[in-house]
Image (cartoon, rainbow, N blue to C red; front, side, top):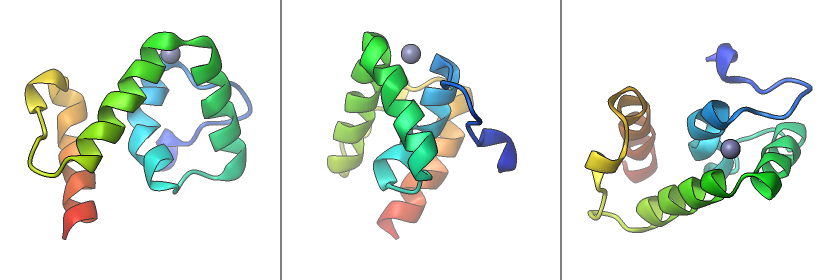
Length: 85
Ligand SMILES: [Zn+2]
């Protein structure tokens, strides 16, 4: 999934949504992580989103998939499957 990599610029909100599981799982390279957090420092909606996903990951069995857009859900479901198996 090389196209998901964040390059030498701040990620967009869309990329924050796409990368949030990597961020929360600690699988993001340090440079990308730094830029991800720089975006969060200026974008409250993304902070809220990251917190929501963090809570969702922390609450097994309480996943409210209706709040996640269809095109994101498949990737998240795959990520959750990796986390919980
Ligand atoms: Zn944002």
